[in-house]
Image 1 (cartoon, rainbow, N blue to C red):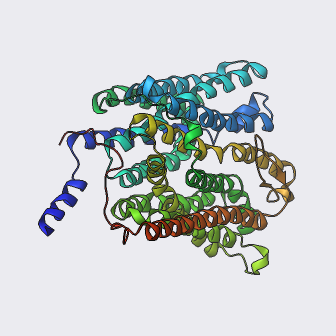
Image 2 (cartoon, rainbow, N blue to C red):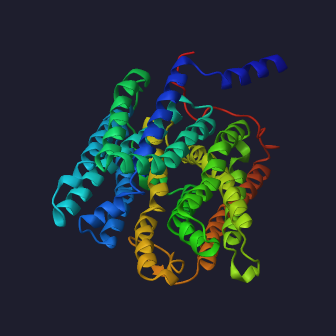
Image 3 (cartoon, helix red, strand yellow):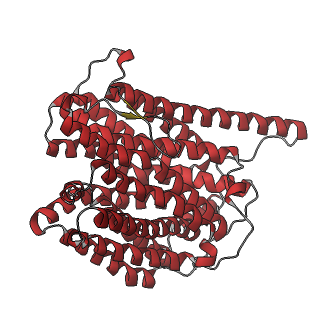
Length: 471
């Protein structure tokens, strides 16, 4: 019996050729997509100002992209079966490649309104391609790796992080060396190369239509709470993007290069820990929920000590800020990596079929919620840079409040704003933890009433989805 169980576990972690090919393809897609997404930050604002674009409009250009990803992800997730997962990801990469190269030619357009309209148009279409690639990639990974979803997503997140880290410095270097067009043309060519690469490597997935809908998916309280937790994570990252650099320059008199290294204190731990927590999540699926709750609590603590919050009466030090960033990086993947698998389990328990249609719905919702946290902060980032240039004394006195279709900026210091962000994250983790405790209580009570004895072995694991892979 022990030999048989060991053989099953070995089969569980042994990947077929198709799975290896899919893993390589998805990693390349995430890396190339994210590096193209992050390339704009270092030089586009200054180039747009040269074209007569106000800082507010520049912020809207950044925020509009995230908003389009949010909306399109839901739509594509609903119709992934009709479109086809493989066709969606390949066409998404192709559209992103074309738009990336076209964006590099916008400096040749007339200043003012023509430039602004073309920026919005190209970014909107690019967002459609990006959303198609990301949404379908989540669905394909879950379909091809039914037993190791969290592990594989953790490995792919390493390449996502690399794309986000390398994008800004690579874009800045290409811009300084060759001008505005070359960064976009070079990365557009990279995306074009991904098209035949993925045509050859990605499997064609058979899919059956179902009557599943986002309305039914969102009727599950557990899924809504997971979405709220995911939103607090992405909004926390957006908060750091918008305010941390200004805080570090003002508080610690750091240079721009040093601030870039400071931000790596967040991204490197996230990328390094993602595969580890993914493996742990798949090996002990009954602990996923508590990983998410624990990660949320640690993230909340990290934000409260990042400033730190004035009520704690702790003196701010550079070493403390770095330590909290590292802690937040680890805790983000502790919550984020198991969440997709947990949403899938919740969807199946809700009665949704184990097919590509359900995967598309969950993938679209996951991608949309993650993008939602970045929408207001993309705008706030540019507005803060404007305030910094005009009123340096106020450069650390803005933060994002509750958002419904827009954003509210209030003048407080970074320490208090970080505490507010930590408080929102704490509330999300607390609600999720209370709900899981309530669920456990209800299950035990139900078993006692039915007289079924002890619950099943929590260590027993079954595939979330039927594998389509050949052995």
